[in-house]
Length: 567
Image (cartoon, rainbow, N blue to C red; front, side):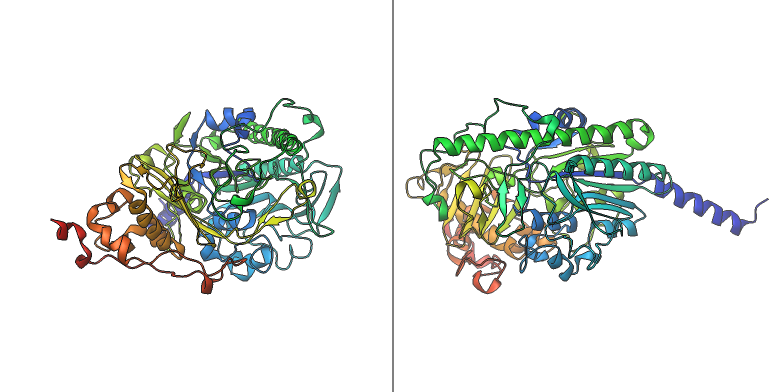
């Protein structure tokens, strides 16, 4: 008979092994600059079969900053860009060196997952500025196995540069970038599956498609259309950018540089259509990558049944909408509303959700699924991705979006223009059962308010003089704008719970939980007469708080109860 202390130790070991094995695995596939609203996912048979049919599609998922590096840092940390202070793709406000400088090499997703008993793997693009001169100064932490695309070859489809584990970087001319990432992902997945009974795993897979082919040396950078694999050239020969009402509209925008954009001419539209087709073609290799991963998992059904697979991108993309040349970085829906699919244990199949979510919610979601306690400094909250989480969900209805600096024009060689200035802005998206709103304050102190329920292409800026008489949900534009401005101000410098529950800051009594509650007439004096406003003193290239006006809101007080005065 086994002595009781020995038996206790034996049972504890068995319990620990079972606990580790019961934690779910994660495979996270992230493309680069993929649109949702230009229909690219409709050209991906594997995304439709393996994700839309086998999982849930969150159609109101947003990036919180529409630019590669800051978006990826927010995604990996669960923090808004104003808290990571990584707000650009390069120094002094962004890039991998800034990520390290801000201390995140020791405080981000893979490090936390390893602490929770996970094996972690990653291949493809990590972030801008992760280059031949910085990749080992210092090495990025948190990965049991890695094979990174690094600059200056990150965006060169047939001449990539990669750095595997702790080996020196290598140049790979003549080999197609997405195929290299797929091969590395399959190798890491084989390794992860072989150890899955002992340790759960996280595998990040980050091909660069459908990003533009970007030549960074010599400067200035040249942005060219993406390059498909040779086997996919010529596909979708008749595809064109969707001719929605927002494509090359006859009426210009009403704020910042949007007011000055002329309509695109025929040659520019033809160029944009060719760019669009090459984006679709480049995504076909991503579909093949997905098929390879699924085939390996299907060969081990016990692993597949315990694995969550996510498909998303870092930010969206526009081509011709609002008269814009190809690019991202704007607060328009094409740039911020992005693909997000998930499948796995407890996830509804073939389902569509319109609950708003964002990239700052992804790490909290993985923690929730893995049974890891949430961190107090997360600026996001778990997305209700499973049926159980959906039943218990109190997910917030707002998304905080922000940007600093210029808008880089992709296709700059063709258009002869490198950037558009005055592109710093703060935006809040509010998606409720009765409203779908986008409110923006620009660094020029111009305002935008769109009712996306009735104006999905953002063509009618309601604060403009010709539209200000309209109402939304029975609310005047002025009253609604005052609430949204206060919400945006609360989110401007929010941290932790203030980011997810901003109405508690505005109403400490906690009797206001959403926009509809805040629209009560009793709060009119508070919002329209007492509250500070979102303003800028100038358009700075990065987060410079001294020029961003008020940083904190005022909380409501009983003596400002306009309803009790009126009654």
